[in-house]
Length: 151
Image 1 (cartoon, helix red, strand yellow):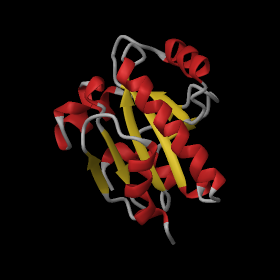
Image 2 (spheres, helix red, strand yellow):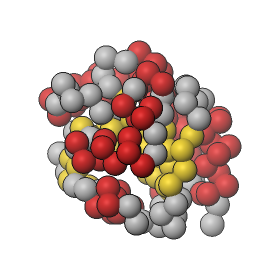
Image 3 (cartoon, one colour):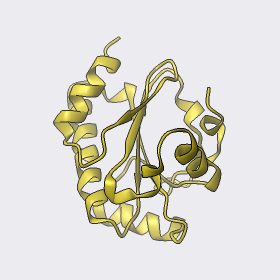
């Protein structure tokens, strides 16, 4: 299990702490973003649609979406306001420096460039898989994740 899975973060929507490790056995979609990034808002709208579609299909409990703000100039207050204004109600947190460092050192430098729309997902066994950069539709995310969401 990568070390960053145990790093504590705080969900700006609820104020509750969490870590990736808390969701072991589930499929976790991790989106990196910044509040100033218009493409991030577009992709987060697709994540919102994916979550709604999965819930409607009765599979929402096995998918965990997490958005991490990687801009070192943004804080929880800014992020909480952004999430509320846009109706983004899943786990959203300011990424700790150690998480950002791990993502860039072990996966890709693109994780520090939110407009590229880097995302990854973690399967039920803790395997980490990068997704192509660029905005991904709810349908394309579903096609990728459905293979991992099926029991």
